[in-house]
Length: 273
Image (cartoon, rainbow, N blue to C red; front, side, top):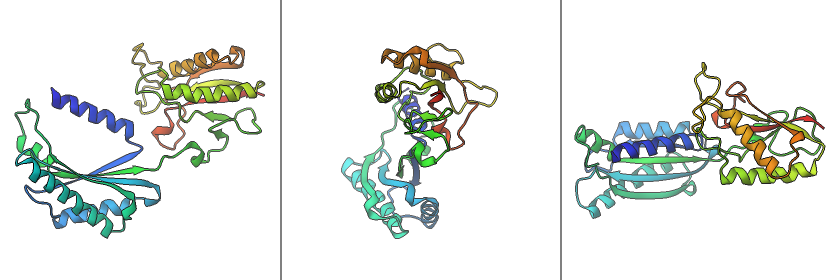
């Protein structure tokens, strides 16, 4: 059960961070920390495909299986991590962006696990290279008419992409960070009192035959609409006149074509100046 829970947490973490980081694992033989030729080739291929202009930092974590004493395993896992670090530097990765080199020691096997123990142990004898990418903002995309704030000379049709308005997966509940973003937007809207707008909700990653995603709370396919409605209600609470606003959910029908992280979004589209 604990192993299943750990896998679920890892899976959720992957979905949450898929666009911000990449993990490359190198597996070692028992009690070894040197790289075989095929492993070195694999590491080199991994380095060569990296766009280093987009890399913010690299972290390297070494692990061992559950056999042996703790002190020995910490030393072995550190040796594995440093072996990979040296190979990365040899192949052109700058030392200054490698911010963490850490041996984690042994990975214990869950008590409930009875099958495939040798395979599990082989996967625990590894080094994880975690590549953290620089955040990409909507401004970096340079999409005409799409802004992360109200432009100086707004026109009908301009779209304000609420960049920090993020929802938990499958949820239409506003997080603390989302409310802070809407507080910022409410202050701007108070300045531009003539602007009327539609709040548009969007989702990503649903199958093509499902144009809308399920809201975990209502269990209905209305997630983008509910997210837009949540923004509408919060802006109303912040004293933005309801006559200035409408809201609508568009499901997955209007992708930006710049990656799924930009399609899970709420926008304010100016309808009247």
